[in-house]
Image 1 (tube, rainbow, N blue to C red):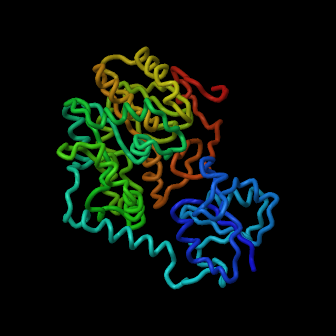
Image 2 (tube, rainbow, N blue to C red):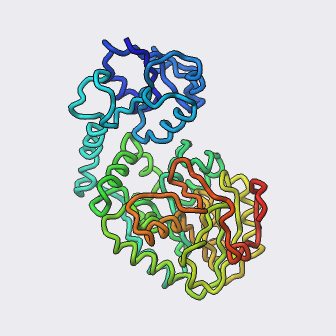
Image 3 (cartoon, rainbow, N blue to C red):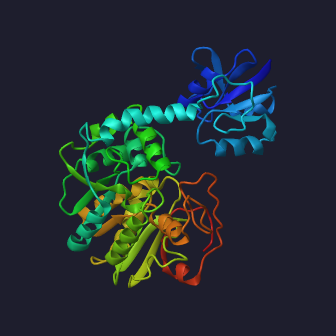
Length: 403
């Protein structure tokens, strides 16, 4: 009888537990990083432990349950757990004799379940919000000079009181502001939400399946409760025009339109300390000038008033303010728009542009820049150039690094 622990105490752990061959494996308990789960019983039977227990516990295997397993796998290896003791159901190399029903893996079962649940929306059989394209959005901004607020999964999860983006904790006032802004109706401030609700045929298959998985288990209904069902929105994926799409011509158009918006203008970039938007590429090459306000990488909302005050100190009435600060950017673009400035929440646009000019088909690390979507986000902190350093006009918070 093999002694095993299951890493993960969420949805997929239940599916994994159901196919463990109990005749050959004894499950000793569950492991989870979430402190709220630690010390309680999973399914009223098995304890959920801190990862540290594995340093002293006796076991033959650890079954890793999340589909996104790579970070957990690395944590286990860093703890000194031999690779041969790590069993990942989603890998074809998972040990034989430990699981039942290997003919159709759980990942396939779940994938087709979500496809079936989402089909009525994709086929136009159920109502969905009105979401206009990113191309229409940018042409409108070029013509009218609007500000832009983006709502994605990070913002919606914070509104729901749930942890999602690693770079911003859930905070009540932030959640309240986001809930107010998404229902606002300002002609000069555009609200965007992701085009996740209907047809997904423009996305790569893996990306479409990721969207279906996210929208399942009550998420669609929850988001619909926040938005105006009769409202007209634009696509929040305007800042992610490349990596998820089948057709790279979408990115061709979107990047040209963004560049046209800041062509010949004085741009103020309000960004995380290691975002380094435009550094090492020509994304902002057409701007007349670029200034940078560097903000904390994590929990920028904690110093929101300081950041906003700094922007107001630096910005002139004709400047274009581009913000890359997660959910904080959504609120700041709105507040600046109300004060008469043009402010754009540009999200991870620079990362997408880096992947686009490299022609990569997957998310990869970018030397010298923070890539929020990649686990194990390593940043080489000394990769500046003189032009970049000269653009920095304010540094808020920070980690003690000297520039």
